[in-house]
Image 1 (cartoon, rainbow, N blue to C red):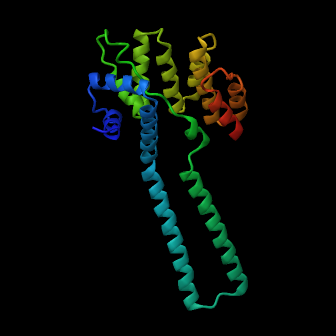
Image 2: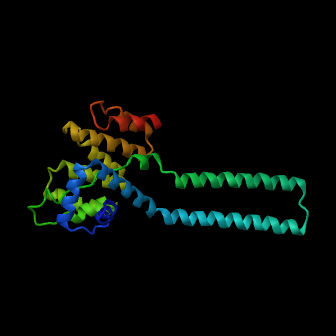
Length: 242
């Protein structure tokens, strides 16, 4: 079974708990496999929005077809005055510009979407001694079902309140669900945490401000990430685009 097929089974939740645990361990040890997994997850996210984009694309085509058909039929009936013809040409040009702007907006990922990528969530191994099977929580998060993951992570944290990584992922869920104030409160709670996790909390806090279109706060948080951090290059890259 090749990596693509295994990744598809992983993201669709078809793996059982033991197979998924083994796959998570392989992802953690294999950067190339982790990159392939992140790429496939991004593609799945893109495809979920494809129907909406296709619908608008068809609508734009229909609008354009009906418009130019009307102009053509009118031209067969009467000769259009030059002033009106100039106005129609200008209106057509404006319509094309608006269409291009809408097209670019829909098909170009936002700055937030370009940087908001996450490592797979892994709870099953840490909670192997508990009664509850948390593999469904992993599957929900890793497949982009953030609403389900948020509810289950909230429950998980009532049983494991000291699990900082799970709390970080709960903040990510809330950020993806546009519960930005709650997400920011979670990320800010890592102020006194170990640097290895605080840097990630700062990174996601900056992304939450980016999603809220608060670029000033986003810059301020990104500037706190030091050259010693593994996220420093990403932070600098985002800073250069703000």
